[in-house]
Image (cartoon, rainbow, N blue to C red; front, side, top):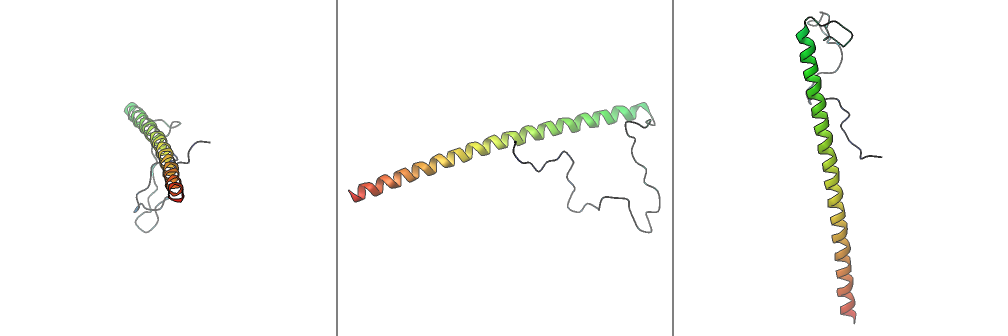
Length: 103
């Protein structure tokens, strides 16, 4: 299994983001109009071009984030290996020093 990651592909919400769902209250009586989906007809041909460009940019950003996460994982593994080697070397040096003291 691969490394655990907090990124699930969805954009993060800012700390002060309003709750997800339809707005409530006296000033939100109008119906929310959603953006067109792939099954709906766009209001103009340009909408599809813009949506496709946005989708391509999102895919590119996801790929870049994944590449960075993978590189960070490799770097962390190298740091852990280095620290393990240093710990083992320090233990050996301490044991050898103690052995020399006792001889």
